[in-house]
Image (cartoon, rainbow, N blue to C red; front, top):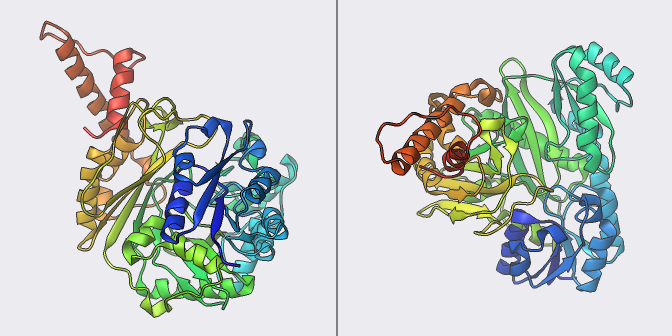
Length: 496
């Protein structure tokens, strides 16, 4: 059965990205939406849309019965899950197949092998990967957690056994922090189908990268160039770049071989992604596998010229991979910046509101993937992600950085605080310029926040100068005020 019509079981920017791939392949895209998303852009771009109603995620984007009913009602041939939500759910994948539809992802059997992260780690070890020490089983109560943490030694990290996207991760540095951390993880894991957690050794000051791969029905596997994702805040990715600033060709070849072993053991088919940790003295260490399209996939598209989403769909349509590993030859340098509705001056707390202004940068090798538009209301029910800015150069990392600085200055989103201004200051930091950073980079760089506050004070000064007849101005303290709110929006929400 050829795929002529696809239902995209997701929301936001990734749904728009999949719609565009469908158009390229002359496939009709159908979408779903919650009542809270009724003004979302992906509805206008699709050939049909199914209203899931209102409520929490289990009532909408994680309600498998509603989604399959929508697919059958629109007579689609396949379901594309995007990422997160039900993308890694083996039960949902089986229901899709049992309904007579194609599933654009790894088989339910493969997903079942790896949906528990502990099982995925054990299989990675079988493939030859090193892993970090862990509790060896799920933790059911505080006493078990305390015992496992004591055996591993602090610091440790609490991780959900099921789920993806960084949900429910908690670093615990001392025993007295453990009980509260357990409660937070359980609360954050409420959106997951299963709430089991495990404990893993925590290692700081690492470098982190991910490698995407494709495997077709003929079991041919190709790996794409790595994407470095070291710069994170609260274990959430902020900046990506390709190629990595530290990975050697020898290490790259070794990782590719390990991934191909792993894919063979899993009998993997379709698209996947492996996250790998690196620290001198520790070596290359398996972190996790993501059996779905990654948000950062456009970095790979920019350095290889390959439409990753189209290839994912073609594999599901029983088409072989078009290239050998030797033919995947990346060129140039690319950077990616995740733009979130968060306030850097308030510990990156979520923000919301209406998009008052939207200015998208242009020029050669600049791309902004988003689902927002002027007048769009940011919903509080979902995550804070607004879009991703991508910049490329054939020449050098430094040229990409300079081009990115220009694009961040041009990118404008007003109405609420965002991370645009933070990114602008971050990429001007001397350590970023040199490519010398680890996963602890953000927490050590309080000077970036100070720079944003100084910029904000300059904006306040300009506002007072404009609005006062006298030139004698006394700046207000950085406390709650309408001037501070406006300046916060300006300094974090747009490039100035």
